[in-house]
Structures are given as structure tokens and as C-alpha cells.
Image (cartoon, rainbow, N blue to C red; front, side):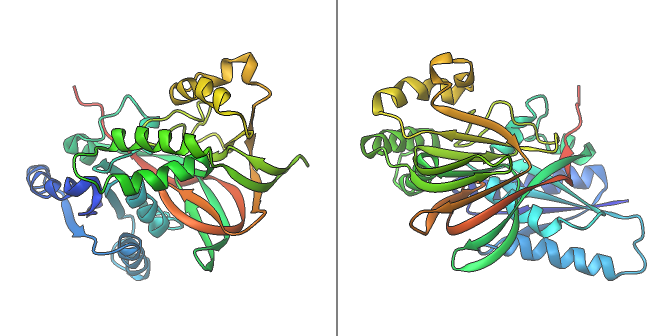
Amino acid sequence: MTRHFFIINPAAGQGEAIKLRSEIDAVCSIAGVDYGIYETEAVGDAENFVRAHCEEHAEGQDAEGEILRFYACGGDGTLNEVVNGACGYDFTEVGCIPAGTGNDFIRNFPSRRFDDLVAQVQGESRLCDLIHYEGHVNGENVSRYCVNMFNIGFDSNVVDMTARMKRLPLITGSLAYLASVGAMLIGKKGANLRVEYKDGFVHNGKLLLISVANGCFCGGGIKGLPKAVTDDGVFDVSLVKNVSRRTFVRLFPKYTKGTHLKEKRLQDVIRYTHETALLIAPKRPPMKLCVDGEITKAGKVLFRIQPKAFRFVMPANIT
């Protein structure tokens, strides 16, 4: 038996997520499933809700064999919270109903209809990797998981500015992102880091950006890490050197489409590898670290792959 919990972030998608409530009621009533709806009230609320239910279920004696399925109804940030609340409990599954502005993790599964609630309820789960990270983040020592991607440098600065621009009237997610890219290009602000790879290679100094990824996409569909696979037991790392504006302008259109690794003239610009562990430290802390689309301030951070760490719901293929 499966119990379905729909966790709605009312702030996601400029208020679009809250409109899901009536459709959830209709679909689940017709399907005859056991379900509940919860609206978050603050950052961290989704994670706390999920963890509390998991702890209560783990202590119970009457629900052996029952599955708790939690659907993150929001963006990648909501999905991140739900996964962090559910991770470690073998009776959990996590789904994602896209209602945010990015929804980049589900882009790794283009054949599935994540916006189809009937398909979601009928779907089955598959094991996916997570990236565990630990270090000093937002003023405290943390040990958490990332579902999709970390961004540092140019990408992170763009995400930060995009979030601020989307608060302006008539500025959509895609327009805000492109405007932020243009603004960041003027300053070409990257990062100054020490990056230690497991094989002994060390980058020490300025770079344009570095991404640590479980999935291919960020920024609402930018395919910056095209070789990333969500269940291959490694994460992908893309380090882009501190290039000139001219080189960046030439690189960016290919970077968005995921074809940049095929360009021979860019092979000296990009270091692209598959890793199981990585250490990043800012030369002048803190660094701006984007975690699944959410901006944090961090010191030294250690990243490790957690293979097949959670069960992700694949919507059924309904014809």
C-alpha cells in the first residue's frame, strides 16, 4: 500500500503551485488512493514535514510494508527539501510535480509527463544518485544532499540576480535569466577557488565557473553538463577557466545547448570530468554556492557521491 503526500510550495512559480490543489483532490478521489495535501509556510518547512512523517512511520508497528510517497509541488528547491527529509528511509519515494521556474532535475527524463497527475499517481520509482556535501554553509556546519547541481562563479551569480529580477513586474523566468547573463557578462564576475580532485589535480586561482552535477541542466534548461547521468555512481564536474568576454560570448550559445564539449578550440578552456569526491575552498571566504537553484554562502565544502540514494517517481506512460 502507498500513501501519497502532496507538498505544495505556495511561493513557487509566482503562485502557480497553489492552483494544483483542486486537481490533486479530483485525481486522487477518482483513483481512490490514500492522500494528503500540505502547504509549506517557510523555508525548511517541506523538509521538516517529510522527516516528521518518516520518523513517525519508522516508529509505528502497524504499517509494515507501506510506502510513503512524497510529491514536491514546486521547483528544484522544494524537491531538494523533500529529498533531504526522506533520505535514509527505505520506505520512501519522492516525486516532483513541476510548479517552479526552473524544474531542471526532471528535464533529465524527457520521455515522462511530470505535469500529468494521473501518470504520477500510477507511476513507479527508480533509484537515483545524490551528491552529499558537508562544510560551513550559511553560518553553520551542515551535512546535506543535493539532487541536481551545485554552481559556483558565473552561473551562481546569474542565478542570484535572476531571483531578484523575477520579483519585478512583467519579467518572466527566461527573460530574467537572459537579462542576468548580460549583466553578469559586463562584469564577468567568476570565482577565486582552490579545487582539489581525487586524482591529485589541483586548480588554485580564478575561474569563470565550476559546476558539480548529478543532472545535465540548470537555469531553466541550460544544458551545461551534457554527460551527466542521474544513476551512474559518479557526479560530473565542469570547470571553465577565467576566459575573455569574447571567448565567453562564443562559448555561451553552445553551452546552453550542451554542444560545447564537441568544440576542439574549447578543450583548453573546459576541464570536464566524472568524480566521486571533490573539495572546493574559496580563497577569500565565503563563496556564493548555488544548491539546486538556491543561493547559500559557504566556506570549504567536501562533495561525495551517494549512489542510488533515493527512489524517484517516474510518471507512468499513459497512452
